[in-house]
Image 1 (cartoon, rainbow, N blue to C red):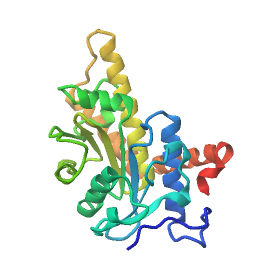
Image 2 (cartoon, one colour):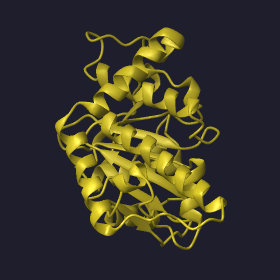
Image 3 (tube, rainbow, N blue to C red):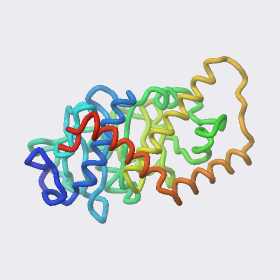
Image 4 (cartoon, rainbow, N blue to C red):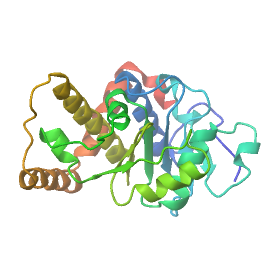
Amino acid sequence: MPISAVDNRSVTPDSDPHYEDRINLAAAFRMTARLDMHESVANHFSYAVSDDGSQFLVNPLGRHFSNVRASELLLLDANDDSTMDKPGAPDPTAWAIHGAMHRNVPQARCVLHVHSKYATVLASIQQSGLPPIDQNTMRFFNRVSVDDGFDGMGLGDEAERLTTTLGDNRVLIMGNHGVMTVGQTIAIAFDELYYFERACANYITALLTGKPLRIATDEVAEKTARQWDDYIDRSPYAEVHLREIREILDREEPDYKL
């Protein structure tokens, strides 16, 4: 399948079968930029649009998150070995990491990877775990994978290894690198990313006080994490979060839909 973006600079339900997916992913880019969780023209988000997960949307090379439009998202095939030789090829690390994830981890329909400030601080210290000190950190209790085999910029073997490290979790701390969240929907993956960065910010800020941490017991932390799981899985919480983001952008940055 060739690399493709929508040609007409404006997507509609009639012009593109992935209309809602493009709009939702573009909204995630724009809000991530507003929250200062991106990095220059690096970092990448992707979403699988085929049943087997191999065909996916991803941001084009060199596009700032705050400028991403729905029509500009590339449609790639994770099994197309010639992708990087074609005109309009994506960033090499985007192709390596996201291609590997969509090729090898079909349950990871949406893959969001950033070098956000506090998650990357956590990825940079020897003890990269997140202790249960508040409701946000407890959301991720025993639900975060940690990759400690960093060996370069996410190309080749590095990308393939990440697909085996995630396991059944929705969050992967990429040691010496950043963070990745995944989900069955764009809404869930973005909600995970948002709350994980908030949790990391709470933890790092607490450490900066130099005071002893108020760490919850494993029993309380697990109870709270299960409550979060139930809340996310049994209610439209994440979808409502994304809906509200779209409403803000519809009012203030409507060009994200173009």
